[in-house]
Length: 582
Ligand code: SF4
Ligand code: SF4
Ligand code: SF4
Image (cartoon, rainbow, N blue to C red; front, side):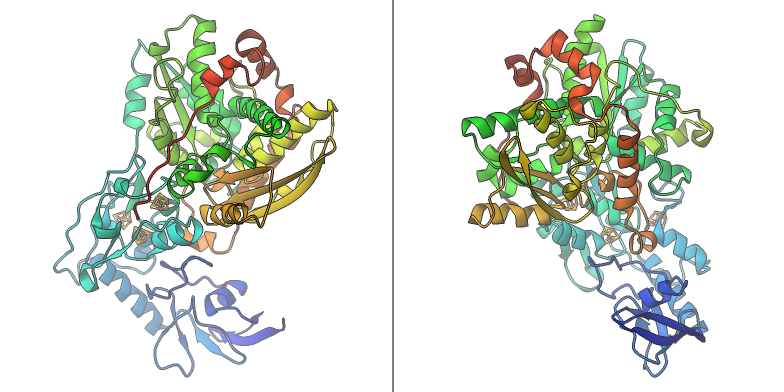
């Protein structure tokens, strides 16, 4: 499509036809501030921060929704524009709990940053009556503090449009408008799936995860406890952002070093149990195909997806793999196999996970997740909580040496690390399923390119040992809905489906460092973080789960064969139908 010629701030500019003023300005190196705007998700022109002057327009226009046209003249920083933005911020602050000193978002709050940029010294200029609200902490994973909500509705949009869940929206009208569950019930009373995507996109401190770092610090200081930590694949691709590294930097070595300096007795890797998952799930898939079991089989790594299935597609519970998630498989193996091997009482072990995910906080409390009679995982913290804890401990993260994980639960293959990106579990499973069925050793495992990339739905058909295997990969629960509806209507016949609750997979999980909309709107953070994981895979000398020596050992010494009775007792689980409450 032809470019459009326009003037921005008196400068001759070009931008692709169909652009908004906001996009055209960015295209020409000019940033316009936003608050409510989220590309493709929340384009409502409501907050009025992105206003600009357009020649001939009677009033300032919202640049995020205003299309460019030939010969247009725009001013993004005129005195009128700057005055308007400042006034809008002052009005927002008139009904805002300005506790920046202790706020969890202080330092990366989009509102705070704009107030500083626009010189909002008199934050109480329009002080008056303020809305009263109570913090909702009913859900297992998060808090909502509406005293810091700016009514941008990003959370509402992501919950409805990306996740297809829609359990939050606007209550009341006018000045009393507030965001929350229908009839203002606690979030726990709804069918919220605990994905945390609302937290990830919130520009302020209104939404935040339940922080368990105080419990963790207490455990680390208890001489009676053995405190072991596992870190999920995606954490290493996100954590560095909290220490100034570019998005998509792999900080695996520094993360391991930091955890050791924080006092963990052993620093292990969820990559180990991702490989274990592939051994169990691959075996389960082959058995279902060969024995006429329920197909399509659907992956069970993502607890947000599992809860979604239980609420919205309970009739498809038999399609779910019975494998526990890698987090839970790790905890179960730690408190059975490893405890036995090391002569430890499972009750003396504190099993800690660092996850890119808030739904993991819900998952650790599910029934049937206590293989040794005590919870498989005791404390699950997010990437953000780990980052804050490293800061609190005064660890000079950037200058740490790179260190490795501890044996034997710290060994993971390249197949395991790509679990963190959408399509990664499918690719890892296919690598091992092909080997199991054909016995072929494939030195070049990159044969499943169709499942890579950040598209919401991917499909492919592979010839696996003479069997045509139809697969689908979906990330973001609205996409999962589309795939499941096609399966239920008979429009599509798949054998194997991977579903991840978060768009792009765990790299974009609800517990990852928050990235401002100013970046999110113009860069694909999912692709950048995923690239880091694929680079780790490529650099790994072991790229198949079944070639992980520690995995071979755990079967030889403890579980017997994949899919054995013992493996089923410890590594598999069941699911429960749940009602829909919106
Ligand atoms: S949400 Fe932002 S502006 Fe409000 S108290 Fe927190 S840091 Fe300050
Ligand atoms: S956690 Fe997920 S499902 Fe729950 S309200 Fe937030 S976006 Fe919606
Ligand atoms: S909770 Fe956050 S994302 Fe939701 S409307 Fe309020 S400020 Fe916006």
